[in-house]
Image (cartoon, rainbow, N blue to C red; front, side, top):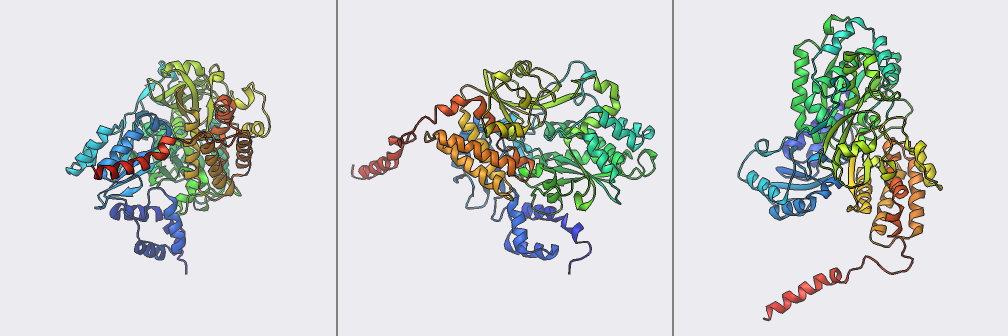
Length: 608
Protein backbone atom coordinates (compact mmCIF):
# COMPACT_ATOMS: atom_id res chain seq x y z
CA UNK A 1 0.00 0.00 0.00
CA UNK A 2 1.36 3.45 -0.95
CA UNK A 3 1.73 5.74 2.09
CA UNK A 4 -0.24 8.98 2.17
CA UNK A 5 2.95 11.06 2.03
CA UNK A 6 4.30 9.11 -0.94
CA UNK A 7 4.37 12.11 -3.29
CA UNK A 8 6.22 14.25 -0.76
CA UNK A 9 8.75 11.47 -0.18
CA UNK A 10 9.30 11.09 -3.90
CA UNK A 11 10.46 14.71 -4.15
CA UNK A 12 13.48 13.75 -2.06
CA UNK A 13 14.57 10.97 -4.41
CA UNK A 14 17.18 12.94 -6.38
CA UNK A 15 18.72 14.18 -3.11
CA UNK A 16 19.01 10.58 -1.85
CA UNK A 17 20.67 9.52 -5.11
CA UNK A 18 23.11 12.43 -4.80
CA UNK A 19 24.02 11.40 -1.24
CA UNK A 20 24.84 7.86 -2.35
CA UNK A 21 26.69 9.00 -5.48
CA UNK A 22 28.91 11.32 -3.42
CA UNK A 23 29.56 8.76 -0.70
CA UNK A 24 30.14 5.64 -2.83
CA UNK A 25 30.91 7.27 -6.25
CA UNK A 26 28.24 5.08 -7.85
CA UNK A 27 24.84 3.58 -7.12
CA UNK A 28 24.97 -0.21 -6.88
CA UNK A 29 22.30 -2.92 -7.06
CA UNK A 30 21.87 -3.09 -3.29
CA UNK A 31 21.34 0.67 -3.16
CA UNK A 32 18.77 0.42 -5.94
CA UNK A 33 16.84 -2.34 -4.15
CA UNK A 34 16.76 -0.38 -0.87
CA UNK A 35 15.79 2.92 -2.48
CA UNK A 36 13.10 1.29 -4.60
CA UNK A 37 11.60 -0.27 -1.49
CA UNK A 38 11.81 2.99 0.49
CA UNK A 39 10.10 5.04 -2.21
CA UNK A 40 7.71 2.28 -3.24
CA UNK A 41 8.75 2.20 -6.89
CA UNK A 42 10.03 -0.63 -9.05
CA UNK A 43 13.74 -1.24 -9.47
CA UNK A 44 13.28 -0.93 -13.23
CA UNK A 45 11.75 2.53 -12.89
CA UNK A 46 14.50 3.60 -10.50
CA UNK A 47 17.22 2.38 -12.86
CA UNK A 48 15.56 4.42 -15.60
CA UNK A 49 15.71 7.52 -13.41
CA UNK A 50 19.36 6.97 -12.49
CA UNK A 51 20.40 6.37 -16.09
CA UNK A 52 18.60 9.51 -17.22
CA UNK A 53 20.95 11.84 -15.34
CA UNK A 54 24.48 12.37 -16.57
CA UNK A 55 26.14 12.62 -13.15
CA UNK A 56 24.75 9.41 -11.65
CA UNK A 57 26.78 6.24 -12.30
CA UNK A 58 26.17 2.51 -12.04
CA UNK A 59 29.93 1.84 -11.87
CA UNK A 60 32.60 3.47 -9.72
CA UNK A 61 33.38 6.87 -11.26
CA UNK A 62 36.57 7.30 -9.26
CA UNK A 63 37.46 9.14 -6.08
CA UNK A 64 38.30 12.10 -8.30
CA UNK A 65 35.82 12.28 -11.17
CA UNK A 66 36.97 14.49 -14.03
CA UNK A 67 34.39 15.87 -16.46
CA UNK A 68 36.03 17.56 -19.45
CA UNK A 69 33.91 19.93 -21.51
CA UNK A 70 33.68 18.68 -25.10
CA UNK A 71 31.49 21.40 -26.64
CA UNK A 72 32.54 23.31 -29.73
CA UNK A 73 34.06 26.35 -27.93
CA UNK A 74 36.26 24.03 -25.87
CA UNK A 75 37.46 22.42 -29.10
CA UNK A 76 38.47 25.84 -30.44
CA UNK A 77 40.94 26.02 -27.57
CA UNK A 78 42.94 23.15 -26.04
CA UNK A 79 40.39 20.35 -25.72
CA UNK A 80 42.27 17.73 -27.74
CA UNK A 81 45.62 18.45 -26.07
CA UNK A 82 44.06 18.50 -22.59
CA UNK A 83 42.15 15.28 -23.26
CA UNK A 84 45.35 13.53 -24.36
CA UNK A 85 47.26 14.89 -21.36
CA UNK A 86 44.65 13.53 -18.94
CA UNK A 87 44.56 10.19 -20.73
CA UNK A 88 48.35 9.85 -20.78
CA UNK A 89 48.79 10.99 -17.19
CA UNK A 90 46.07 8.67 -15.87
CA UNK A 91 46.76 5.76 -18.21
CA UNK A 92 43.12 5.45 -19.27
CA UNK A 93 40.94 6.48 -22.19
CA UNK A 94 37.99 8.83 -21.94
CA UNK A 95 34.98 7.19 -20.31
CA UNK A 96 37.00 4.95 -17.97
CA UNK A 97 38.27 4.75 -14.39
CA UNK A 98 41.81 3.91 -13.28
CA UNK A 99 42.40 0.41 -11.89
CA UNK A 100 42.88 1.76 -8.38
CA UNK A 101 39.58 3.70 -8.70
CA UNK A 102 41.45 6.89 -7.90
CA UNK A 103 40.45 8.78 -11.07
CA UNK A 104 37.58 8.68 -13.52
CA UNK A 105 37.72 10.58 -16.81
CA UNK A 106 34.52 11.51 -18.64
CA UNK A 107 33.46 14.03 -21.25
CA UNK A 108 30.47 16.27 -20.72
CA UNK A 109 28.59 18.94 -22.60
CA UNK A 110 28.89 22.66 -21.95
CA UNK A 111 29.48 23.43 -18.26
CA UNK A 112 28.83 27.18 -18.39
CA UNK A 113 32.48 28.20 -18.70
CA UNK A 114 32.71 29.03 -22.42
CA UNK A 115 34.49 32.29 -21.63
CA UNK A 116 37.30 30.37 -19.88
CA UNK A 117 37.93 27.32 -22.01
CA UNK A 118 39.23 24.69 -22.04
CA UNK A 119 37.43 23.85 -18.76
CA UNK A 120 36.66 20.82 -16.61
CA UNK A 121 34.96 19.87 -13.37
CA UNK A 122 36.71 17.60 -10.86
CA UNK A 123 34.24 16.49 -8.21
CA UNK A 124 32.31 19.60 -9.34
CA UNK A 125 35.18 21.98 -8.57
CA UNK A 126 35.88 24.11 -11.67
CA UNK A 127 39.22 24.17 -13.50
CA UNK A 128 39.49 26.79 -16.23
CA UNK A 129 41.87 27.83 -19.03
CA UNK A 130 43.35 24.33 -19.09
CA UNK A 131 46.39 23.44 -21.15
CA UNK A 132 48.08 20.06 -21.45
CA UNK A 133 50.73 21.17 -18.96
CA UNK A 134 48.15 22.47 -16.50
CA UNK A 135 46.16 19.23 -16.74
CA UNK A 136 49.25 17.20 -15.85
CA UNK A 137 50.01 19.57 -12.95
CA UNK A 138 46.47 19.23 -11.58
CA UNK A 139 46.74 15.43 -11.56
CA UNK A 140 50.15 15.64 -9.90
CA UNK A 141 48.86 17.94 -7.15
CA UNK A 142 45.89 15.67 -6.45
CA UNK A 143 48.23 12.70 -6.12
CA UNK A 144 50.33 14.72 -3.68
CA UNK A 145 47.24 15.09 -1.51
CA UNK A 146 46.40 18.74 -2.17
CA UNK A 147 42.71 19.53 -1.80
CA UNK A 148 40.59 20.34 -4.83
CA UNK A 149 39.34 23.47 -3.11
CA UNK A 150 42.89 24.79 -2.83
CA UNK A 151 43.90 24.13 -6.45
CA UNK A 152 40.68 24.79 -8.40
CA UNK A 153 39.97 27.97 -10.36
CA UNK A 154 36.88 29.79 -9.15
CA UNK A 155 35.49 31.20 -12.42
CA UNK A 156 35.93 34.87 -13.14
CA UNK A 157 32.73 36.83 -13.72
CA UNK A 158 34.19 38.52 -16.82
CA UNK A 159 31.61 41.31 -16.87
CA UNK A 160 33.00 43.06 -19.93
CA UNK A 161 30.43 45.75 -20.52
CA UNK A 162 27.42 47.53 -19.04
CA UNK A 163 25.78 50.83 -20.04
CA UNK A 164 27.97 53.77 -19.05
CA UNK A 165 24.92 55.57 -17.73
CA UNK A 166 23.98 53.79 -14.48
CA UNK A 167 20.38 54.89 -15.01
CA UNK A 168 20.34 52.57 -18.03
CA UNK A 169 21.96 49.67 -16.18
CA UNK A 170 19.51 47.09 -14.88
CA UNK A 171 21.57 44.21 -13.53
CA UNK A 172 25.20 45.06 -12.84
CA UNK A 173 24.94 48.00 -10.46
CA UNK A 174 24.86 48.28 -6.65
CA UNK A 175 21.99 46.44 -5.03
CA UNK A 176 20.37 47.27 -1.70
CA UNK A 177 18.73 44.18 -0.25
CA UNK A 178 15.02 44.63 0.45
CA UNK A 179 14.51 47.87 -1.48
CA UNK A 180 12.12 46.22 -3.94
CA UNK A 181 10.32 44.29 -1.22
CA UNK A 182 9.72 47.47 0.79
CA UNK A 183 7.55 48.82 -2.01
CA UNK A 184 5.16 45.90 -1.64
CA UNK A 185 3.75 47.62 1.47
CA UNK A 186 2.01 50.04 -0.88
CA UNK A 187 1.19 47.61 -3.69
CA UNK A 188 -1.40 44.87 -3.96
CA UNK A 189 -0.49 41.59 -5.72
CA UNK A 190 -2.59 42.77 -8.66
CA UNK A 191 -0.64 46.05 -8.77
CA UNK A 192 2.65 44.14 -8.99
CA UNK A 193 1.38 41.90 -11.77
CA UNK A 194 0.08 44.92 -13.70
CA UNK A 195 3.47 46.62 -13.36
CA UNK A 196 5.32 43.54 -14.65
CA UNK A 197 2.82 43.26 -17.52
CA UNK A 198 3.26 46.91 -18.44
CA UNK A 199 7.05 46.55 -18.30
CA UNK A 200 6.82 44.03 -21.18
CA UNK A 201 9.30 41.82 -19.32
CA UNK A 202 9.47 38.45 -21.04
CA UNK A 203 11.19 35.15 -20.29
CA UNK A 204 14.95 35.42 -20.71
CA UNK A 205 15.62 31.70 -20.82
CA UNK A 206 14.61 31.41 -24.45
CA UNK A 207 10.83 31.12 -24.67
CA UNK A 208 10.23 34.90 -24.31
CA UNK A 209 6.77 34.34 -22.82
CA UNK A 210 5.36 37.51 -21.18
CA UNK A 211 6.19 37.29 -17.48
CA UNK A 212 3.24 39.31 -16.25
CA UNK A 213 0.80 37.18 -18.20
CA UNK A 214 2.27 34.02 -16.68
CA UNK A 215 1.97 35.49 -13.18
CA UNK A 216 -1.63 36.56 -13.82
CA UNK A 217 -2.61 33.07 -14.94
CA UNK A 218 -1.09 31.60 -11.78
CA UNK A 219 -2.70 34.24 -9.57
CA UNK A 220 -6.13 33.47 -11.05
CA UNK A 221 -5.86 29.72 -10.35
CA UNK A 222 -7.18 29.20 -6.84
CA UNK A 223 -5.23 26.68 -4.75
CA UNK A 224 -4.20 25.98 -1.17
CA UNK A 225 -0.55 25.96 -2.29
CA UNK A 226 1.45 27.60 -5.09
CA UNK A 227 5.12 27.54 -6.02
CA UNK A 228 7.76 29.78 -7.59
CA UNK A 229 10.59 27.91 -9.30
CA UNK A 230 13.71 29.62 -10.60
CA UNK A 231 15.08 27.76 -13.59
CA UNK A 232 18.85 27.94 -12.99
CA UNK A 233 19.49 24.92 -15.21
CA UNK A 234 21.50 27.00 -17.67
CA UNK A 235 22.40 24.17 -20.04
CA UNK A 236 22.33 25.80 -23.46
CA UNK A 237 25.89 25.55 -24.87
CA UNK A 238 27.67 28.88 -24.87
CA UNK A 239 25.46 30.40 -22.17
CA UNK A 240 26.84 31.48 -18.78
CA UNK A 241 25.12 34.79 -17.92
CA UNK A 242 23.06 33.15 -15.17
CA UNK A 243 26.25 31.80 -13.61
CA UNK A 244 27.51 35.36 -13.30
CA UNK A 245 24.23 36.64 -11.86
CA UNK A 246 24.13 33.80 -9.32
CA UNK A 247 27.64 34.62 -8.19
CA UNK A 248 27.45 38.42 -8.19
CA UNK A 249 23.86 39.10 -7.11
CA UNK A 250 22.15 35.98 -5.70
CA UNK A 251 20.27 38.35 -3.37
CA UNK A 252 18.71 40.03 -6.40
CA UNK A 253 17.36 36.66 -7.53
CA UNK A 254 15.95 35.79 -4.11
CA UNK A 255 14.23 39.17 -3.89
CA UNK A 256 12.75 38.64 -7.34
CA UNK A 257 11.40 35.24 -6.29
CA UNK A 258 9.86 36.70 -3.12
CA UNK A 259 8.14 39.44 -5.14
CA UNK A 260 6.81 36.78 -7.53
CA UNK A 261 5.56 34.80 -4.53
CA UNK A 262 3.71 37.85 -3.21
CA UNK A 263 2.18 38.55 -6.62
CA UNK A 264 0.78 35.07 -7.29
CA UNK A 265 0.14 33.96 -3.69
CA UNK A 266 2.92 31.36 -3.47
CA UNK A 267 4.60 30.49 -0.17
CA UNK A 268 7.45 28.25 -1.35
CA UNK A 269 10.22 28.87 -3.84
CA UNK A 270 12.87 26.59 -5.29
CA UNK A 271 16.03 27.36 -7.22
CA UNK A 272 16.65 24.44 -9.58
CA UNK A 273 20.45 24.68 -9.78
CA UNK A 274 22.29 22.70 -12.46
CA UNK A 275 24.84 20.24 -11.10
CA UNK A 276 27.58 21.96 -13.09
CA UNK A 277 27.11 24.99 -10.81
CA UNK A 278 27.31 23.09 -7.55
CA UNK A 279 30.26 25.29 -6.53
CA UNK A 280 27.78 28.21 -6.37
CA UNK A 281 25.42 26.51 -3.92
CA UNK A 282 27.11 27.81 -0.76
CA UNK A 283 27.00 31.34 -2.13
CA UNK A 284 23.26 31.02 -2.78
CA UNK A 285 22.54 29.33 0.56
CA UNK A 286 24.37 32.14 2.38
CA UNK A 287 22.27 34.71 0.53
CA UNK A 288 19.10 32.89 1.58
CA UNK A 289 20.27 32.98 5.21
CA UNK A 290 20.92 36.72 4.92
CA UNK A 291 17.31 37.22 3.84
CA UNK A 292 16.02 35.06 6.67
CA UNK A 293 18.10 36.91 9.25
CA UNK A 294 16.81 40.23 7.90
CA UNK A 295 13.23 38.90 8.18
CA UNK A 296 12.85 39.23 4.41
CA UNK A 297 11.94 35.55 4.14
CA UNK A 298 9.64 33.60 6.40
CA UNK A 299 6.32 34.57 7.99
CA UNK A 300 4.53 37.90 7.56
CA UNK A 301 7.43 39.46 5.62
CA UNK A 302 7.77 43.21 6.38
CA UNK A 303 4.60 42.92 8.42
CA UNK A 304 2.49 42.34 5.31
CA UNK A 305 -0.43 40.11 6.19
CA UNK A 306 -0.34 36.64 4.59
CA UNK A 307 3.00 37.37 2.87
CA UNK A 308 4.80 34.15 3.76
CA UNK A 309 7.61 32.93 1.55
CA UNK A 310 10.73 30.75 1.76
CA UNK A 311 13.38 29.63 -0.74
CA UNK A 312 15.37 26.39 -1.04
CA UNK A 313 17.94 25.10 -3.54
CA UNK A 314 17.22 21.92 -5.48
CA UNK A 315 20.24 20.32 -7.16
CA UNK A 316 19.85 18.99 -10.69
CA UNK A 317 21.89 16.00 -11.79
CA UNK A 318 22.85 16.73 -15.38
CA UNK A 319 20.18 16.78 -18.10
CA UNK A 320 19.89 19.47 -20.77
CA UNK A 321 16.21 18.79 -21.30
CA UNK A 322 15.45 19.83 -17.70
CA UNK A 323 15.70 23.39 -18.97
CA UNK A 324 12.18 22.78 -20.29
CA UNK A 325 9.78 23.72 -17.49
CA UNK A 326 7.68 20.55 -17.37
CA UNK A 327 10.82 18.39 -17.50
CA UNK A 328 12.31 20.44 -14.66
CA UNK A 329 9.18 19.92 -12.58
CA UNK A 330 9.22 16.17 -13.28
CA UNK A 331 12.85 16.08 -12.10
CA UNK A 332 11.94 17.85 -8.85
CA UNK A 333 9.19 15.30 -8.32
CA UNK A 334 11.75 12.47 -8.42
CA UNK A 335 11.10 11.32 -11.96
CA UNK A 336 12.99 11.20 -15.23
CA UNK A 337 13.20 14.78 -16.43
CA UNK A 338 10.99 14.23 -19.44
CA UNK A 339 8.75 16.97 -20.87
CA UNK A 340 5.06 16.28 -20.44
CA UNK A 341 2.24 16.91 -22.85
CA UNK A 342 0.66 20.32 -22.20
CA UNK A 343 -2.75 19.10 -21.10
CA UNK A 344 -2.27 21.57 -18.28
CA UNK A 345 0.27 24.36 -18.12
CA UNK A 346 2.40 24.64 -14.95
CA UNK A 347 0.47 27.76 -13.89
CA UNK A 348 -2.59 25.48 -13.73
CA UNK A 349 -1.08 22.21 -12.50
CA UNK A 350 2.66 22.29 -11.99
CA UNK A 351 4.85 21.09 -9.15
CA UNK A 352 2.96 18.42 -7.14
CA UNK A 353 -0.13 19.29 -9.17
CA UNK A 354 -0.28 22.85 -7.81
CA UNK A 355 -0.16 26.17 -9.74
CA UNK A 356 3.50 26.94 -10.39
CA UNK A 357 5.45 29.80 -11.96
CA UNK A 358 8.76 28.81 -13.58
CA UNK A 359 11.00 31.76 -14.50
CA UNK A 360 14.61 32.09 -15.58
CA UNK A 361 17.33 33.65 -13.37
CA UNK A 362 17.68 36.78 -15.50
CA UNK A 363 13.91 37.26 -15.64
CA UNK A 364 13.50 37.14 -11.86
CA UNK A 365 16.52 39.39 -11.30
CA UNK A 366 14.92 42.07 -13.47
CA UNK A 367 11.78 42.31 -11.31
CA UNK A 368 13.27 44.07 -8.22
CA UNK A 369 15.02 46.53 -10.52
CA UNK A 370 11.72 47.49 -12.17
CA UNK A 371 10.26 48.24 -8.74
CA UNK A 372 13.43 50.06 -7.73
CA UNK A 373 13.80 52.41 -10.71
CA UNK A 374 10.11 52.72 -11.53
CA UNK A 375 8.12 51.59 -14.55
CA UNK A 376 8.49 54.84 -16.47
CA UNK A 377 12.29 54.80 -16.21
CA UNK A 378 12.44 51.11 -17.14
CA UNK A 379 10.34 51.70 -20.26
CA UNK A 380 12.68 54.53 -21.34
CA UNK A 381 15.51 52.00 -21.77
CA UNK A 382 15.79 49.76 -24.83
CA UNK A 383 13.18 49.63 -27.58
CA UNK A 384 9.42 49.99 -27.65
CA UNK A 385 8.68 46.26 -27.80
CA UNK A 386 11.62 45.11 -25.69
CA UNK A 387 12.40 47.63 -22.96
CA UNK A 388 15.35 47.26 -20.62
CA UNK A 389 18.66 45.56 -21.16
CA UNK A 390 19.78 42.08 -22.22
CA UNK A 391 22.61 39.93 -20.90
CA UNK A 392 24.67 38.17 -23.56
CA UNK A 393 27.24 35.42 -22.99
CA UNK A 394 30.06 35.93 -25.48
CA UNK A 395 32.71 33.38 -26.47
CA UNK A 396 34.68 32.14 -29.46
CA UNK A 397 36.85 34.14 -31.83
CA UNK A 398 36.88 37.49 -30.03
CA UNK A 399 39.34 39.35 -27.82
CA UNK A 400 36.93 40.01 -24.95
CA UNK A 401 34.82 36.96 -24.08
CA UNK A 402 32.49 37.35 -21.12
CA UNK A 403 29.11 38.78 -20.12
CA UNK A 404 27.71 41.93 -21.68
CA UNK A 405 24.73 43.95 -20.50
CA UNK A 406 23.52 45.86 -23.53
CA UNK A 407 20.53 48.06 -24.13
CA UNK A 408 18.02 46.39 -26.43
CA UNK A 409 18.33 47.84 -29.94
CA UNK A 410 22.12 47.78 -30.35
CA UNK A 411 23.20 47.01 -33.92
CA UNK A 412 24.81 43.63 -34.36
CA UNK A 413 27.74 45.22 -36.18
CA UNK A 414 28.38 47.55 -33.23
CA UNK A 415 28.20 44.63 -30.83
CA UNK A 416 30.78 42.68 -32.85
CA UNK A 417 33.09 45.68 -32.59
CA UNK A 418 32.45 45.94 -28.85
CA UNK A 419 33.49 42.34 -28.18
CA UNK A 420 36.55 42.51 -30.41
CA UNK A 421 35.33 39.92 -32.90
CA UNK A 422 38.14 38.60 -35.06
CA UNK A 423 37.12 38.38 -38.72
CA UNK A 424 33.60 37.16 -37.84
CA UNK A 425 32.21 34.74 -40.40
CA UNK A 426 29.50 32.80 -38.57
CA UNK A 427 27.76 33.62 -35.29
CA UNK A 428 25.86 30.98 -33.39
CA UNK A 429 23.21 32.94 -31.55
CA UNK A 430 21.18 31.52 -28.64
CA UNK A 431 23.17 28.32 -28.34
CA UNK A 432 22.78 25.05 -30.19
CA UNK A 433 18.99 25.49 -30.31
CA UNK A 434 19.46 28.96 -31.80
CA UNK A 435 20.39 30.15 -35.25
CA UNK A 436 23.40 30.87 -37.42
CA UNK A 437 24.01 34.46 -38.45
CA UNK A 438 26.23 35.65 -41.29
CA UNK A 439 27.43 38.94 -42.74
CA UNK A 440 23.97 39.64 -44.17
CA UNK A 441 22.71 40.02 -40.58
CA UNK A 442 25.34 42.46 -39.33
CA UNK A 443 23.16 45.56 -39.83
CA UNK A 444 20.25 44.13 -37.88
CA UNK A 445 19.51 45.21 -34.35
CA UNK A 446 19.38 43.00 -31.26
CA UNK A 447 15.75 43.40 -30.28
CA UNK A 448 12.44 41.60 -30.04
CA UNK A 449 11.09 43.50 -33.02
CA UNK A 450 13.74 42.05 -35.31
CA UNK A 451 12.56 38.53 -36.07
CA UNK A 452 14.64 36.73 -38.62
CA UNK A 453 11.61 35.05 -40.19
CA UNK A 454 10.22 38.52 -40.97
CA UNK A 455 13.43 40.30 -41.97
CA UNK A 456 15.49 37.85 -44.01
CA UNK A 457 15.72 38.65 -47.73
CA UNK A 458 16.13 35.15 -49.13
CA UNK A 459 13.85 33.09 -51.34
CA UNK A 460 13.03 29.84 -49.58
CA UNK A 461 12.05 26.49 -50.99
CA UNK A 462 10.00 23.92 -49.14
CA UNK A 463 10.46 22.27 -46.72
CA UNK A 464 13.27 24.40 -45.28
CA UNK A 465 11.32 27.62 -45.77
CA UNK A 466 8.37 26.38 -43.79
CA UNK A 467 10.48 24.70 -41.10
CA UNK A 468 12.61 27.81 -40.68
CA UNK A 469 9.66 30.14 -40.38
CA UNK A 470 8.09 27.77 -37.89
CA UNK A 471 11.06 28.27 -35.59
CA UNK A 472 10.40 31.99 -35.05
CA UNK A 473 13.68 32.32 -33.18
CA UNK A 474 14.96 35.78 -33.97
CA UNK A 475 17.42 37.85 -31.98
CA UNK A 476 15.47 38.08 -28.78
CA UNK A 477 15.87 35.08 -26.48
CA UNK A 478 18.49 32.98 -24.67
CA UNK A 479 21.64 35.03 -24.65
CA UNK A 480 24.48 32.88 -26.03
CA UNK A 481 26.72 34.54 -28.63
CA UNK A 482 29.46 32.34 -30.14
CA UNK A 483 31.70 33.86 -32.82
CA UNK A 484 33.57 31.83 -35.44
CA UNK A 485 36.00 33.20 -38.02
CA UNK A 486 36.66 31.94 -41.55
CA UNK A 487 39.29 29.46 -40.42
CA UNK A 488 36.68 27.38 -38.57
CA UNK A 489 34.96 24.43 -40.19
CA UNK A 490 31.22 25.06 -40.17
CA UNK A 491 30.56 21.38 -40.82
CA UNK A 492 32.63 20.40 -37.77
CA UNK A 493 30.69 22.88 -35.64
CA UNK A 494 27.41 21.43 -36.91
CA UNK A 495 28.66 17.93 -36.13
CA UNK A 496 29.25 19.00 -32.52
CA UNK A 497 25.73 20.46 -32.43
CA UNK A 498 24.00 17.36 -33.80
CA UNK A 499 26.00 15.06 -31.51
CA UNK A 500 24.88 17.21 -28.58
CA UNK A 501 21.21 16.70 -29.38
CA UNK A 502 21.71 12.98 -29.86
CA UNK A 503 23.28 12.78 -26.39
CA UNK A 504 20.81 15.12 -24.69
CA UNK A 505 17.50 13.96 -26.16
CA UNK A 506 15.32 12.63 -23.36
CA UNK A 507 14.28 9.87 -25.76
CA UNK A 508 10.58 10.04 -25.03
CA UNK A 509 9.48 10.93 -28.57
CA UNK A 510 10.62 9.33 -31.81
CA UNK A 511 11.12 12.47 -33.95
CA UNK A 512 13.74 13.97 -31.63
CA UNK A 513 15.33 10.70 -30.51
CA UNK A 514 15.67 9.09 -33.95
CA UNK A 515 15.62 12.17 -36.16
CA UNK A 516 18.63 13.84 -34.58
CA UNK A 517 20.56 10.57 -34.69
CA UNK A 518 19.89 10.32 -38.43
CA UNK A 519 20.89 13.95 -38.95
CA UNK A 520 24.14 13.31 -37.12
CA UNK A 521 24.90 10.42 -39.46
CA UNK A 522 24.12 12.63 -42.46
CA UNK A 523 26.56 15.27 -41.22
CA UNK A 524 29.17 12.51 -40.81
CA UNK A 525 28.61 11.51 -44.41
CA UNK A 526 28.89 15.08 -45.70
CA UNK A 527 31.93 15.84 -43.55
CA UNK A 528 33.73 12.81 -44.99
CA UNK A 529 33.02 13.90 -48.54
CA UNK A 530 30.41 11.22 -49.29
CA UNK A 531 27.36 13.49 -49.44
CA UNK A 532 25.23 14.52 -52.39
CA UNK A 533 22.18 16.66 -53.13
CA UNK A 534 19.81 13.89 -52.06
CA UNK A 535 21.37 13.98 -48.58
CA UNK A 536 20.74 17.72 -48.37
CA UNK A 537 17.12 17.24 -49.32
CA UNK A 538 16.70 14.51 -46.72
CA UNK A 539 18.24 16.72 -44.02
CA UNK A 540 15.65 19.38 -44.79
CA UNK A 541 12.77 16.89 -44.81
CA UNK A 542 13.81 15.20 -41.56
CA UNK A 543 14.39 18.58 -39.88
CA UNK A 544 10.87 19.57 -40.86
CA UNK A 545 9.47 16.38 -39.30
CA UNK A 546 11.44 16.94 -36.08
CA UNK A 547 10.18 20.52 -35.81
CA UNK A 548 6.59 19.56 -36.46
CA UNK A 549 6.38 16.42 -34.37
CA UNK A 550 8.67 16.73 -31.35
CA UNK A 551 6.97 16.75 -27.99
CA UNK A 552 8.67 19.78 -26.45
CA UNK A 553 10.15 23.10 -27.50
CA UNK A 554 13.72 21.84 -27.11
CA UNK A 555 13.09 19.09 -29.64
CA UNK A 556 11.36 21.50 -32.00
CA UNK A 557 14.35 23.86 -31.97
CA UNK A 558 17.05 21.18 -32.18
CA UNK A 559 17.45 21.62 -35.95
CA UNK A 560 17.43 25.43 -36.03
CA UNK A 561 21.20 25.72 -36.18
CA UNK A 562 21.54 23.17 -38.98
CA UNK A 563 18.75 24.67 -41.10
CA UNK A 564 19.99 28.25 -40.77
CA UNK A 565 23.56 27.18 -41.55
CA UNK A 566 22.33 25.55 -44.76
CA UNK A 567 20.47 28.74 -45.57
CA UNK A 568 23.30 31.18 -44.78
CA UNK A 569 26.31 29.15 -45.92
CA UNK A 570 25.18 27.02 -48.88
CA UNK A 571 28.69 27.09 -50.36
CA UNK A 572 30.04 25.16 -47.35
CA UNK A 573 27.70 22.29 -48.16
CA UNK A 574 27.97 22.51 -51.94
CA UNK A 575 31.72 21.95 -51.95
CA UNK A 576 31.26 18.79 -49.91
CA UNK A 577 28.25 17.40 -51.77
CA UNK A 578 29.31 17.62 -55.39
CA UNK A 579 30.55 14.06 -55.49
CA UNK A 580 28.09 11.98 -57.51
CA UNK A 581 30.46 9.05 -58.05
CA UNK A 582 31.29 6.10 -55.84
CA UNK A 583 34.68 7.57 -55.04
CA UNK A 584 35.36 7.60 -51.29
CA UNK A 585 36.72 11.10 -50.73
CA UNK A 586 37.58 10.42 -47.11
CA UNK A 587 39.86 7.44 -47.81
CA UNK A 588 43.46 8.05 -46.79
CA UNK A 589 45.96 5.42 -47.84
CA UNK A 590 48.51 6.46 -45.23
CA UNK A 591 46.02 6.15 -42.36
CA UNK A 592 44.69 2.88 -43.73
CA UNK A 593 48.13 1.27 -43.76
CA UNK A 594 49.51 2.88 -40.61
CA UNK A 595 48.85 -0.03 -38.25
CA UNK A 596 50.18 -2.53 -40.77
CA UNK A 597 53.37 -0.54 -41.33
CA UNK A 598 53.88 -0.17 -37.56
CA UNK A 599 53.51 -3.93 -36.98
CA UNK A 600 55.89 -4.76 -39.83
CA UNK A 601 58.47 -2.31 -38.45
CA UNK A 602 58.22 -3.88 -34.98
CA UNK A 603 58.64 -7.40 -36.43
CA UNK A 604 61.60 -6.35 -38.55
CA UNK A 605 63.24 -4.67 -35.56
CA UNK A 606 63.30 -7.99 -33.69
CA UNK A 607 65.53 -9.45 -36.40
CA UNK A 608 68.00 -6.54 -36.44
